[in-house]
Length: 171
Image (cartoon, rainbow, N blue to C red):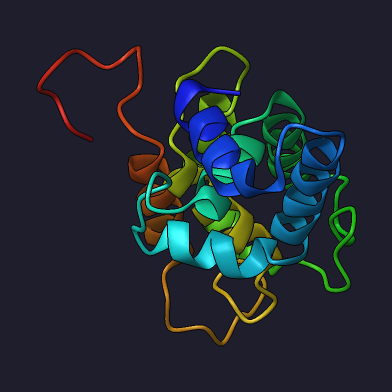
């Protein structure tokens, strides 16, 4: 847990005293954040600072976890696998194959950016989650006016600068 998150959570939960109730309160706070994940993800994706509230800080920490990054990367790689004509794991609908094929290079770059050890920002991870879970979004709905390539490029940009990218250069 980074220093800010620890401080914010401890401050938020300090009124409960130093007894065993603090551990319960922290678990309860994490559970609350988990149930509100979609709402918190939308706020982060829209540009809310992860440091603006303890809930957003906890959610940002969860989004940056290796487990979350691995799951998102695996889902993106599954999209790019030719035999993956069906649904993504956990998805009820199939992606629009023509849209996936049109944005193949951008999706591969996005998956690459989610490798372990890559610095990523919570805002970008929240955008990736939205892209992969919005059944009415450009990745799943062929009738969407939104360009899937542009949406993926926005998610890549929101992840922050790539360590491979020279300073001052933008994509």
